Image (cartoon, rainbow, N blue to C red; front, top):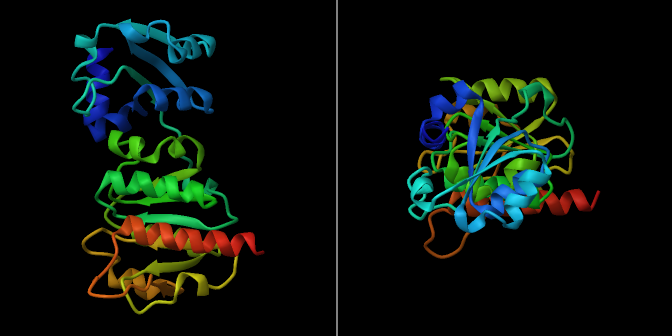
Length: 254
């Protein structure tokens, strides 16, 4: 069991073979137990043997094993020992089952799992109907899970992989009537000026490369967050969150 946890935390291919992933920390484990997830088991340190998270796991009928701190040390990817760890079944939707209403966030080949997870959090906070990972980051990466602060457990999301992940994603979105808007550093519409329609998909590109030209050419339009001074561009997390907020304001005004 312990070697499986260690490998799930570090090996993307193994996570997808097993259809499972690791959740780290008592706060996130508690949130996962409160969510509609299939939790395989929970491990807690001796100091948490009779804690709220351990009691919650048992109340949910989830196996809860108590281990020494020295046993838990090194199981996960964080520098400090996590006092509570859970293994859960993967729960992404098929791409055709994503909600077809509201606005959708598309993470197109993002490389940083911290950025991706935080953007999932922003997507939930600003009322997105779902998130689509098109290549790049594995949503079940432990850093992505931590950065989402529980949002990954609640917001619908899906994953499209392969060499043509972004193009395949666009094919699907356009087929289902989505209006696709690509985020660029400059030259696009201000976020508040986006057409006020319910089926918008916001595409955010790789941190260093942005969105490929062939993808931008297929988008309904481009959107940019205006900056002042000598700032060349905003971090994808900041820019994406600002655009999501603008979409949220528009939605509330419907």
